[in-house]
Picture 1 (tube, rainbow, N blue to C red):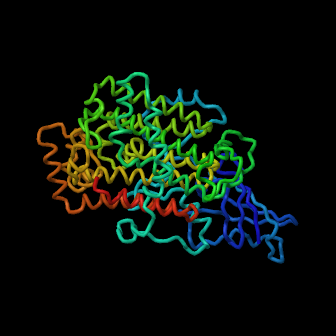
Picture 2 (picture 1 turned 60 degrees about the vertical axis):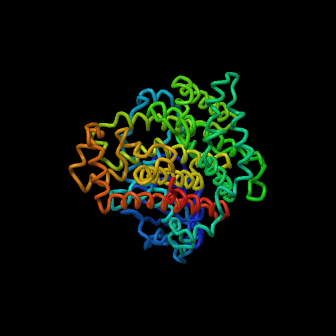
Picture 3 (picture 1 turned 180 degrees about the vertical axis):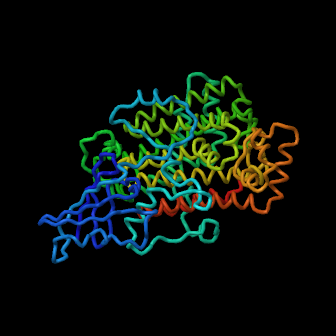
Length: 530
């Protein structure tokens, strides 16, 4: 039994082909958003006959089998479904992302002027993926719902992980060691890539690459994701429709001169470009740290003096600008315009996060979703866009199932990382963290632990809304937080929720050593003490 579906994707004008074989939908070429309610599927047999189904989900019903697509009013008397084709007509006609309240950095008019019919129009990841648990008002992502629906008749075969189980995690490959040999040459060359003829600028730019380089968390993610993506076959691109406005979703993947596999990935041109992306991501990240320290007047970073304290504010700003300029040049040399736009959007997101942090209205300071959107802009956006870009450099199209899973993994991993960072701001010691403890409260920022405490203790809310500006505000907030029996536990549960969602997305990729290492890396993110 085989049925081919040609689905007009929710008013996008992009045509997709998928297959049902033995009631299981095999890998599609594009992962679309979930169908809107009341989607009407109509089926026509090549010998005549018509079948239809009105699809009105409240989410996807796991008890609904794909065979229900075949209607009893078909003229196919032998119940042979070998040659059906189908189109979909949706009512209402299209799916639209929910309106966002992100800070306006670029006006809508200016944004519209910068687009043509075929340029990417990226939706913020928090509008694509689940940002809050269901019991806090969150909804499952459309990509997750669609994946569940397509594979609903298959028995779950993915392993179960307890990310806080030290014993189980130690059985998995150590992520940093797995790519240490491959990463080292690129890590060593970063300092040379940012060299300048101006000695002071050169020293300032190299500071975090030579003396305070940390664990190179982001390049490690990119390198591991590159290896995991190499285990995934590149999906065939779907046919283009007459509407060119969404053709970019089926494009964006780098052209491969030969198929990339786990065996030939290392030392290939694809591998080199993906490793260079890791360098670029680290440059962007370090530039953001240097600029953040100037804005926040932070005196330490990674256990040492911040760049602006070693030199001056002017030198620090120029050093950050110089790193971003070098990153932009190297980004262009990847020769993938889709990746350039995605990573440029990551840069824009970093700026949006800073503006949101400085200018959010008082009432938004109490909202958990607002806090998570800011965390997305400042932390998760760079990680998730780097993950999707890694898939594109591996030959996968922007809208492919693999690329979407990569971005979804990075989105949740980035949020889990930031939430854990915010928990450590209260529980860690400055000498261990490498930066001052309670730094967020000093800046007037409220993070997950304080927000959960404010939900329980109304007296905290005015303090949050005025950014702890009055004398004694911080002390009272801390007392309320540590008096709460649940606030810190809820923050930890939120970090766990996002780490679990990261694994859920990751397990859509084929099994590989790199995938296992990414699972362990996710565990490290939520169990670390610094």
